[in-house]
Length: 184
Image (spheres, rainbow, N blue to C red):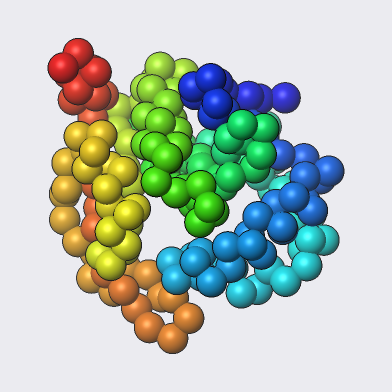
């Protein structure tokens, strides 16, 4: 089973059906915080609803089309991050992530996303990585900005969330830019 060690305290791991209860507990414990930016949170009201989703995540990994991995912090599930899909023709992917409220402000997500960018360029041999964040989600924007991603533009009304649209900022990183960032 896939596992990526990020730091001594942080790792990414594929989750299985046995992890559905813990995943539900993490989401449920941060429901108000997460629902502000994630449209699926309100629809996930029971642990068994994660079964089909976990199955699809495992299939995504088996198909080599990216992955969704649990963020483990000191042995506890703290959130999720991964590649939405991998476009091998254009050698690009996009990264998505969320973190439970209690784990924010510890540098976890910056370390995770940095490792995912490394993985995209080294393991998948991609050329471009993209991150999209809602214009109002300042904490999420801080991750690609901190890592040196280029702000490429705004997709107006790019995502519908509950009863309204919001704009999305598009951040991009090219492989050669990442190599330069790593050296500096």
